[in-house]
Image 1 (cartoon, rainbow, N blue to C red):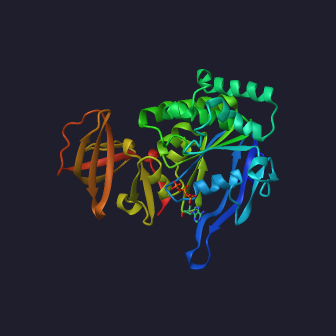
Image 2: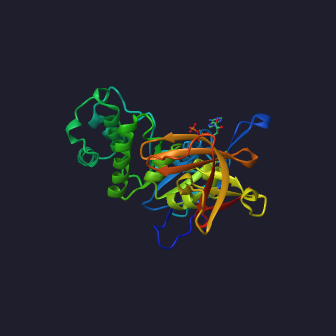
Image 3: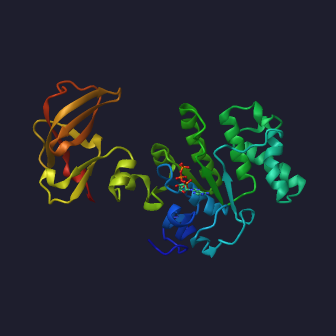
Length: 346
Ligand SMILES: Nc1ncnc2c1ncn2[C@@H]1O[C@H](COP(=O)(O)OP(=O)(O)OP(=O)(O)O)[C@@H](O)[C@H]1O
């Protein structure tokens, strides 16, 4: 990785540099390391996601970028300039909160205008900009409505319009879709991606939903226990996870001790369930392992075969469509193309 704040050729220039950021809460024995030496870069115009399980430090990192929290040590750079001492309202960064935080006593137009009034924009400019962002989120007909009279998805669009109104360079989104039901969440994923492309802004999203991260992001930072484990494009993280945690957290992974398949001991092979076939005679170039089938579950588009092999290691294969001839209790040969396996340190 190049030093935080430097330019990366090819992709957009580096916009934000997270440079050896530590954050500790509390003192003494009760101290929590929410962030441990986070170092990476976010580029101009990219849809960047902080992904990890609850408590991994992603919201803390978002709040540090926004200026609501300060690092215990380390720097946040914007265009190579340390912005650590700038208050939130002086940073070209805006946040869309999980709860939307819309004012119930104001209508849509007043909600969006509020932040611009605080920034002392001229009334005519405010009106023009509110109309523009309502157009952008496809809600111009709702300008005079109270936000309390709107559905979750509509409120979310208004919250987005309000966050975009002051023309920030970076939009921070804290679990933006978590309050929506599954169907609406899928629809809004497309909407978020469209908005990011249309505005050419840098979006930095926090989520614990790996599918959402894979679907939306140009690049993802996978975090666990305050550490940034890998920063890469979704396909790269899926195919070449940096650790067993990343392999298991992003999609499903079979993690098989290398010694079980005749490789030198002490490492772990990661292989995705959809890359495994269940076949008594594995093809040339394939690696195989015998296991006892413990479950056969038809899932519609595919069938999940679960099995247990030597050493009480479980293995899962996802086969296309319905499967016949494989039953619980039988021994079967699970095999995969060696080119698809990925070797990890144990
Ligand atoms: N203000 C605070 N005071 C003390 N501890 C805090 C504070 N904010 C966060 N923490 C702790 O820091 C760690 C990281 O929290 P953070 O909210 O950043 O995690 P997260 O990954 O966003 O989790 P979630 O998905 O649950 O929101 C957690 O252990 C949390 O309890």
